[in-house]
Image (cartoon, rainbow, N blue to C red; front, side, top):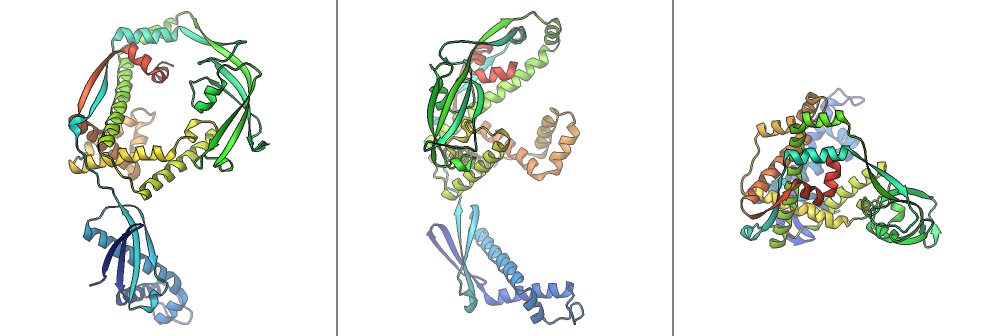
Length: 436
C-alpha cells in the first residue's frame, strides 16, 4: 500500500496521508537524473555528473517540487477513491520532523460541497408577468418620448423627491477633516440614483445653502482602505435645487417616419428585452422560495472565497468610478455572496441530478446571437472559440437557462397580466433605458 488514510473532522475535513520514503526517493532520483541529462556541470560531460553533485546544487528546489507534486497526487487519488467533491483550495500541513521518519506523513484540510436536497417543488408559487404589447402602444410611447424634452429649473423651496440637487461635501473622522478627499461636488436626482439611501433621505426638506451632517459607517469591504470600519461624518452643503419640467417639442417628421418604417424590428427588440427582465424576475423568485423551503448551510471556506472574489471586482470597478457614496460599495457583501451561492448551488444540484446537458450547436447559436450585436461579428465569434473560459461561461449560462425551465415545469406559476403601459410604469428604471 502506497499510503494510509486516517480521516478525522475538525476545522473542516482532514485527511492524513502516509507516503513511503521509497516512493519519495525514487521521485527525487528521477528528477535529479532529468536535470543531469539536460544541464552542463563543470568538470563533467552532460549526463555524467554524479547524482550527489546534482543534489548539492539543485536539491532545495527539487525537494520542494517533488514533495508538492506527490502531496497533490496522493490527495487527489484519495478524493477520487472516496468520490469526494471538494470546494475551495485544500491546505497542506507537514510535520517538521517528517524527514526522520520511515514514511512521509502530511495532512490536508479541505471542505466539501454542502448536502443539498431539493424538495417541496409543488409548494412553490411564483408570479410571472404577461405583457400584452401592441404596435399602437409601442408607437405611442416612442413618439411621445421623441416629442418632449426635459429642462431643470432652479427653485427656492425645500428639497422634494425627484428634484435635482447639487451638493458639496467633505469627510471627517473624529472631527478631523480627511484631506485626501478634499471637497467634492456631486449632482443627482433625489431618490432616483445609485447613492446611499441615507444621503437621499437626509437632504429632503432642506434648502439651498443649508449645511447638514450625516454619519456613515464604512465597512471593511469598501474600496477605500483609509475609511475601513470607521464612522465617518459627511459635512454637506446644498448648493442648488432644481425641479423637472417636461416641455412639448415639435414633432420630428424624420424620426416619426423612422419609427413607422422600423416599428416591427423596434417592437421585437422591446419584446426581447422585456422577456429577459421577466425571466430574471422569475428566476429570483424561484431561488428565494427554494432556499426558504430547502435551507442550505454554506461552508465558511466557500463563502469566504465568494466574498473575496466579489470584493476584488468592486475594487477594480472603483478605480474608474471613484464615487465613495455609491451604495454598491456599502452593501452587505456577505449577504450578497450568500444569495449568489444559493443560486449557484441549487442550479448545480438541479443540473447534476437531472443530467441536464447543452450540446455544442446551442453554444454556437448563442455565440452567434451575441456576436450579431457587434460591428465585427466574426471577430467576436473567433474570440469565444479561442478563449476556453469565455466559451465555458456561455455553456454555464445555457445550462442555467435549462435548469430554470426545468423548475418552471415543476412549480406553480401564476400569470399576472399587464398592458404595455402598466408594465413600463411598474418598471420605471427599465422604461428609461428603453426609450431614452
